[in-house]
Image (cartoon, rainbow, N blue to C red; front, side):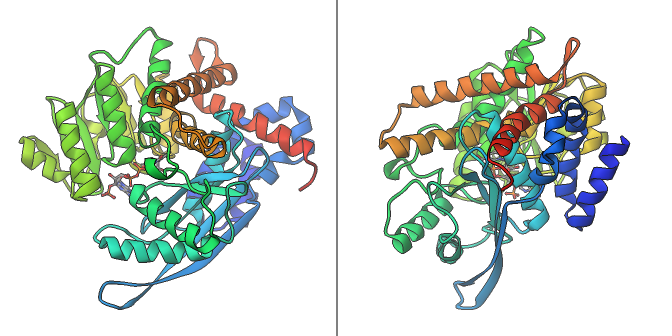
Length: 446
Ligand code: NDP
C-alpha cells in the first residue's frame, strides 16, 4: 500500500474502530485521491480529506414499538448527516438486521461523492435501523415507521435533510413515515422522496436506480463499440433496483438470466421475459415471497444456501443486492467466463479484491457511486417538482435521468482516462470530490 494511504488509513481506523465497511469505502476513495491531491496542494492545505471523512453530525436513537402480540420491541435508529457543502443532506434509509453505524457511515460517505456527480445540489446522508421488515405485518411495519419518524422528524426537513428508500424501505415504508411526519409537523412538504404519485412523488423514481445502472452500462459499452443487444446479463438481488435493471435490459435487447435474494439465486437460461418480470414484481413487492418460488413456477434452476449468481456465464454483470456480494474469486470467474462489463446497482457490492481483478483485466467497471446515482438523481428531480408544485411527465423525467447518467459517464471519463482505458473508480472519486471540495473551501472552516 502507498505509504501516504497507509498513514491516512491508520488514522481513520483508529478514530472509527470496528467500522470495517466504512474503512473499506474510505480506502477506495483515498487510494485514487491522494495522487490527485499531490497535484492540487490547496486541498491538502485545507485538510479537505481529513474533514470529508468526518460526518458533520451523527444521530442515534431508540425506536420502541409494539408488535402484534402486544410485546415491546426495541430497535436502533440512525441518521448520518455526512456533508452539506453543496446542498441539504440527501440519502436513503435502510431497514435491515445488518445495519450498524459502520455500514451507514460507508453509505453516507459514498453518497457525498455520488450526489456531487449528479450535478444536482444535494449533500450526502444516510440512515436507517436494524429493524427487519421481513415477516412483519403491515401494522407492525406502520407502528415501527411511526416510532422511527417520531424521533427523526426533529432532525430533517425539505431544506435540511431529505431521506429516501433503500434496502427494506420502499413505497409502503415511505408512506407510513411521510404520514407521521405530516401529522407531527402539520406541514405537507417534500421531506422524503420516493413518495406515491398521488402525494408528491415523481414518475420514474421507482425505476430510476435500475434504469440508471443500465444506462451507465450502455455508455460504458459504447466506448468499445458494443451494445446490450444479444448480451447475456447476470443480475443479483430481486428488489427495487434489480427489477428495473432487468426491465431496461429487456428494452435494450439483452437477456437477463439470473436474480437472487439472501437465500440463493435462480438461473433461467431462457431469460427473464417481461411476463416473468411481472410475476417477480408481484411476488416480491406484494406477496413479499422468496425468489425460489420463481424456479418452482417456471421450472428453472434454483441454487440455495445463499449462493450468488456470478458463476453463471454472462457478458454483463449487474450486482443489485448488497455490499461485498462479489469477491475476488467470483470476479475471476466472471472474467474467465467472458464478462466484459460490471455496472453496480448496489452500493459497494464488489470487494477490493474483486475491483483489482476488474481493473487488472481492463474490463468495463462502473462503481456504484457512479452507476447507481440515477436513483438519487431522480430523487433530486422529485425535490425540484415538489418545490415547483409541478409534475413532469414520464418521458420528461426519464430523459433527464438518461442525460444525467450520460453526463456522469462523461465526468468519469474526464477524470479517469488512463491512455485508452477508463478507470471509472478514479474518475468517479475525483469527479465527485472536486465540486464538494471547492464548496468546502469557499465556506470556510465549518
Ligand atoms: P430492496 O430491499 O428492494 O432489495 C434488496 C435485495 O437484495 C433483495 O433481493 C434482498 O434479498 C437482497 N439482499 C439484501 N441484503 C442481502 C444480503 N445481506 N445478502 C444477500 N442478499 C441481500 O433494496 P434495493 O433494491 O432498493 O437496494 C439494493 C441495493 O441497491 C442496495 O445496495 C442499495 O443500497 C442500492 N441502492 C438502492 C437505491 C434505491 O433507489 N433503492 C439507490 C442506490 C443504490 P432478501 O429479500 O432475501 O433480503
